[in-house]
Image (cartoon, rainbow, N blue to C red; front, side):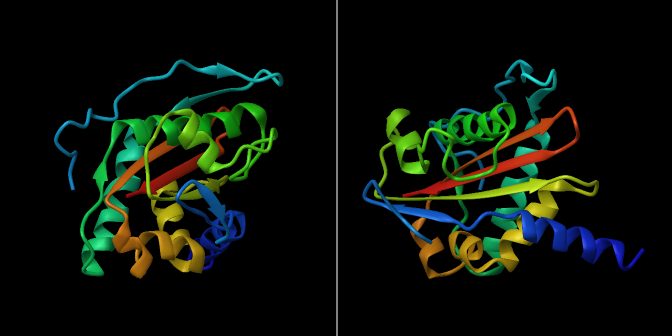
Length: 190
């Protein structure tokens, strides 16, 4: 049993994509709900895929990612992130698009990146970043994703390093495909 947990964590670490950070609208390589923010409880309908599979958002996992990320920030002495519904919607759309169109990347098959998606949704920002994870096998996908992000230098930068102190707001999107694969997206901005 002790060898299974590290193997799962290692699998998640290999599946993580390097972070994409954005400043001033240009792509560069790598708590509680706030006042005026709506709760992230929008339930999207299942979305069919050409292979006959479907996917749905998972609010419980979104809240767990948010909680675990803020716990790590609190332990590091950083201010807690505030959940914003427009960012939840942005993260959910990307997670859902990855599930429906069967890809895993900060850039969709049409070449649009995180900054493009934010601008399309009219999200105003001065600093923006995104963490992605894909979990295929058992366990707690939220915990595995956040632990994997904390072990990856680019993802950790978005959560905990000095750059992370620049972020005030977040949104989390989680989609579980019919085959059990869980796709997670967390966006950060100031």
